[in-house]
Image (cartoon, rainbow, N blue to C red; front, side, top):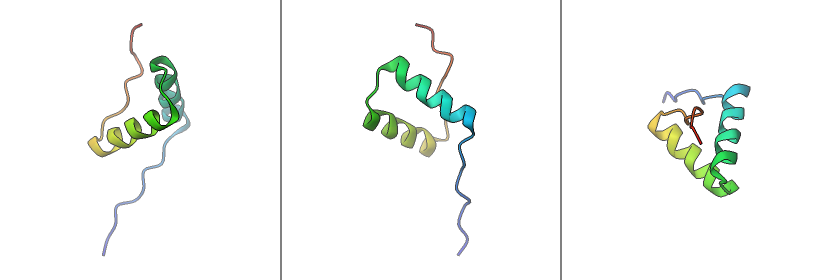
Length: 51
Protein backbone atom coordinates (compact mmCIF):
# COMPACT_ATOMS: atom_id res chain seq x y z
CA UNK A 1 0.00 0.00 0.00
CA UNK A 2 1.52 3.29 -1.11
CA UNK A 3 0.97 6.46 0.83
CA UNK A 4 1.51 10.02 -0.24
CA UNK A 5 4.48 11.69 1.45
CA UNK A 6 3.55 14.18 4.14
CA UNK A 7 3.79 17.82 3.10
CA UNK A 8 6.38 19.79 5.01
CA UNK A 9 5.67 23.47 5.58
CA UNK A 10 8.53 25.80 4.72
CA UNK A 11 9.46 28.53 7.23
CA UNK A 12 7.96 31.11 4.82
CA UNK A 13 4.65 29.23 4.66
CA UNK A 14 4.55 28.92 8.45
CA UNK A 15 5.18 32.66 8.77
CA UNK A 16 2.44 33.41 6.23
CA UNK A 17 -0.03 31.31 8.20
CA UNK A 18 0.79 33.08 11.46
CA UNK A 19 0.58 36.54 9.86
CA UNK A 20 -2.76 35.68 8.28
CA UNK A 21 -4.09 34.50 11.64
CA UNK A 22 -2.89 37.68 13.35
CA UNK A 23 -4.52 39.88 10.72
CA UNK A 24 -7.80 38.02 11.10
CA UNK A 25 -7.53 37.93 14.92
CA UNK A 26 -8.07 34.17 14.85
CA UNK A 27 -7.91 31.93 17.88
CA UNK A 28 -5.52 28.99 17.78
CA UNK A 29 -8.32 26.51 17.06
CA UNK A 30 -9.67 28.72 14.25
CA UNK A 31 -6.20 28.90 12.72
CA UNK A 32 -5.71 25.12 12.90
CA UNK A 33 -9.08 24.41 11.31
CA UNK A 34 -8.51 26.92 8.49
CA UNK A 35 -5.07 25.47 7.73
CA UNK A 36 -6.52 21.95 7.74
CA UNK A 37 -9.23 22.99 5.28
CA UNK A 38 -6.67 24.80 3.12
CA UNK A 39 -4.45 21.71 3.00
CA UNK A 40 -7.39 19.50 2.05
CA UNK A 41 -8.42 21.88 -0.70
CA UNK A 42 -4.77 22.34 -1.75
CA UNK A 43 -5.04 26.10 -1.48
CA UNK A 44 -2.46 28.35 0.03
CA UNK A 45 -3.66 30.79 2.64
CA UNK A 46 -3.67 34.27 1.08
CA UNK A 47 -0.99 36.58 2.44
CA UNK A 48 -1.66 39.66 0.35
CA UNK A 49 -4.88 40.69 2.08
CA UNK A 50 -5.38 44.45 2.10
CA UNK A 51 -6.70 45.91 5.32
